[in-house]
Image 1: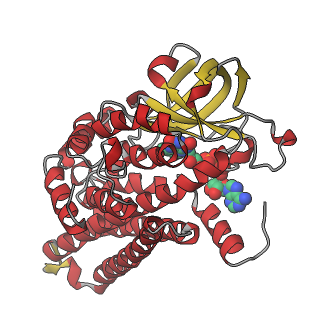
Image 2: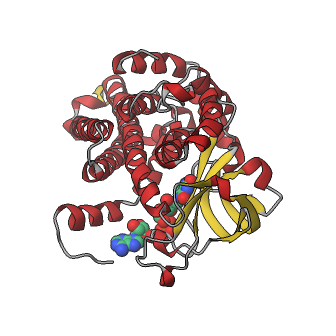
Length: 383
Ligand SMILES: Cc1cc2nc3c(=O)[nH]c(=O)nc-3n(C[C@H](O)[C@H](O)[C@H](O)COP(=O)(O)OP(=O)(O)OC[C@H]3O[C@@H](n4cnc5c(N)ncnc54)[C@H](O)[C@@H]3O)c2cc1C
């Protein structure tokens, strides 16, 4: 793929035209996965954008990936069905052995294999990942894995999953972040052989599941990087995840602002367009300002990431600003549309529900503020 970001945005916008609001509404009602949409993105090469050319991808950076996902959302579509393919793969790319990369990446790049699932969250540990209780115990050439995960998305639509498990108990590890490992689980073999997947209904159509893991055997050859260093590895890929999700939030905010400003200019009440009233016009203008400010922070974080520089602060700030911008733009759009905002056919209530997720996942607003307060500003830690 030799397109620059403007060309990428144009091409993605054209692809998205084939997937209008009606398509997403139908999926939302039936809680179905957007298989056709994901296949179209894969076939156009967008999901393998971060995979180096040597392994069959386009070898572009996070800024290009952010342009793809941002445009998907600005077009009224949703990249959540497949965004993990981009950032989950980064852990394998950065920390996997050459043999693992040769084994898995070409299949992921061609779309033959989907690596869409990332198993971190557990019912009892929540945000405190160092307290996960899923264990992986070495037995010959395998790890034997036991535990439970919650809110693990897309496992039913993925061939592979990155799984976080403790290989050393927290109390025996030198540091609380040590002793956690990343395993690549082949879901095609695991389901029914120690892994049970149970769908978990949520307020959005996100294909999320609970995982029950009972003596699941994973070959030691599927350990990514060194045993016990998994926490660091996922922290690395979390910066990419935050930047890409922030780009999606900016796209959502732009979609809400475009919808609201158009409707405010057309809808006449009391004999004039409602957008002439500053009580309607100014919140939309403010939502636009917030979205564009967040977009600059996303660009800045992506630029640092692609230059191989530290970008933890920028990635976190981008995620916070962008998720707040989409959430606020959603509120404003709902208000602008009055009763029609609640009607399914306008797509706003669905998009509004979807924006709620990014106040919580993949990292909550509170935890970002805690990162900025302690790591950036040097204030005392609360945990
Ligand atoms: C639809 C959906 C899809 C998801 N997909 C995935 C996935 O694919 N893979 C995966 O691993 N996880 C996934 N998650 C999980 C998500 O990342 C977690 O929900 C999130 O990390 C928060 O964990 P928790 O829900 O256990 O909240 P808790 O940790 O119980 O926190 C509850 C609230 O308390 C706040 N809080 C906690 N500790 C502090 C503190 N010290 N200071 C201030 N505030 C604090 C949190 O910010 C939060 O607002 C998904 C969640 C949802 C809803």
